[in-house]
Length: 328
Image (cartoon, rainbow, N blue to C red; front, side):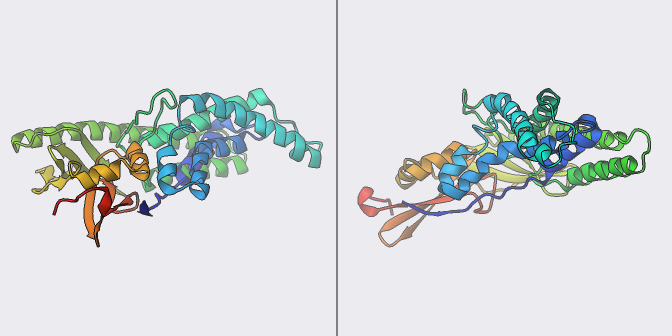
């Protein structure tokens, strides 16, 4: 029985800014409804977030960033979006104002594809991950490059959009240049952060070997505001070693002495993992671990993920005493 679930937070400002920047950079100019298509398309794959309104938390978590973010959706959603915009144009926009230039399906296809494809590419860059090959493969892909809310990206895109609009409103030449420059700056920043993640994994692996730690999978997690600092999750036998990577320090890698136990061998954890909610949570979890406590004769097992130290994405399952005899 599920006793509790913490719902993950969504932020779509970055996706919206990318759509707006693409429009100011030229994809939205002189094409009716192209800018609207870019703004909608940049957010469209997150339509799966509405599952939280009518499905339970673990089911929604397992569903997220799959069907609407995978390769099949990338082929279907842009076409559907362009068709929907043309239909809205005919039924609403030009019915109200017949003198308006009609929107063309072919003209909207490129903005639709550019906007929709930008979404999973941006989602890939954080530690949450995305299932690019869904439904043909359920594998998650992680870029570990940007924090899910990156103000530096916001600032760069917003500045480019504002300057381009200012140039366009005053009839200055080449109003698209500031937006293009901001997009180029964001791409360069992303490339630098991807390189930083790859290099950081190498440094953490070397530090683990020098400390005699048998290391497995490694995550170098970005943090808010500071591109020179990363949080470390290092898989070791029985659990995880946490730590921090600071590029501007002489001793760049500092690993905690203790181990965060996975507790997956405990029969109570195994029972929770086999529950309906446990199976759904583990579809999403990357570094799962189990916290076990008693409530009367029953055991409460919280399934968590070492990526996120808080409880914003966790599920708690009650394992009744009659189901198994818990160890003391």
